[in-house]
Image (cartoon, rainbow, N blue to C red; front, side, top):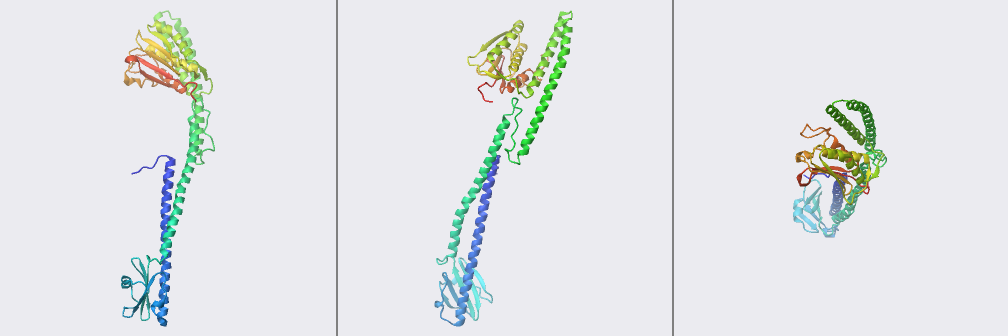
Amino acid sequence: MMRAPRSLLGQFVVLHIAVALIATLVLLWSATTLLHQTADRFQRSLLVRQAQVVAAARADGAGTMAAIPLINGMAVATFGSDRRIDRSSGPARRAVLAAAPLDSRAHFFRRGAVEGYSLPTRGGWIVVSQDDTDPEVITDDIVRTFLKRFALLTLPIAALVPLIGVLLARRLTLRMRAVSAIAATIGPQSFDTRLPRGVLPTEAEPLAEATNAALDRLVAALHIQSAFAADVSHELRTPLAAIRLRADAVADAGVRADLMASVDRAARVIGQLLALAELEQPQVAGAEAFDLVALATQVVADRAPGIVTAGRSIAFETATDVAPVHGYPDAIILALENLVDNAAKYTPVGTAIIVRAGPGARLSVIDDGIGVPAAQLARLKDRLWRGADRGIEGSGIGLSLVERIARAHGGTLTITPGPAGRGLVFEIVLRDRATPH
């Protein structure tokens, strides 16, 4: 069974074509029926008049049958009371005369293409017949000629109806596409954009109004969430600072180190949660152009001492065609720090870590550690997921935060196995300044 097209334009075109075809067929059938009925009435009227002329001439005894003029190739025959033909004029139509009803009433009858009329008179009957195919009969010729010209006139009109429908539907879809293009630009950097009023049809205008109202509510909720996260972060940082002071006064070095590590981990989690909350709100200010090489160099320099002390190595590489980036450098620093810290935390001693800038607008962190099973690669970016080893310390939101930062800059975070199947490659691909928003 043929399925209807899913697009509005396709459905509109199919509907108009179907309506135009049905209307054309119905109109042609109606015109044909009406014309044939009119021609039939006209033909029967001629038959009646011809029969009346013959009846009047027979009653007066005026002349012979040959002297009576016949109209449009008619044939006339008179029957006596014994139902035998007395006289005839015109083409001999024995089969028609044999089929003529001879009784007390006048009858119209048809034998093939011949229309006949039987009229009872005093002392017999008069039968008048006319062959529709006779060259002298012009009624059917007129009907056929008219129908041909009528069809030639109707078909262009029928084709014009769906064409007008297509143009109207095309105009409607262009307006909807224009509004859809505006809707596609709404994002973290343009949450103040709204769908225009007065562009969509009146029937679709409530959809634009509802969408704008939903965006207003979403922006308001995000602002509330951001304010709440900032308040919570502030309230938690103060007691954490007090705990750090108290932990620093603990005499036992081992206990003091464990307490300080726990406080640092809590502070890091709070910072990540605050960063996530800030990324979820509309980004309306603070974007600037920055250099990926300088940014990555700063992160490597800050993290190198701790990584080397822990028994790992770190190096920085740069491509020759690093593209400038427009965005939020503090967020990119936080993302790169998370990737470097993860590489240092989840790899064994002796692992080599490489931070690479470029080519283009991308940052990569590569290690040659033990890696992750292929089945778990896709889940590394899931928030709060830390894999099968529950002994690993961490919040499980670091990679989720990195991915969110990448998406906030119109980019992506990809995770793939490292060279020769060892370790992992974390790559942040960003939108460079030359790429249109």
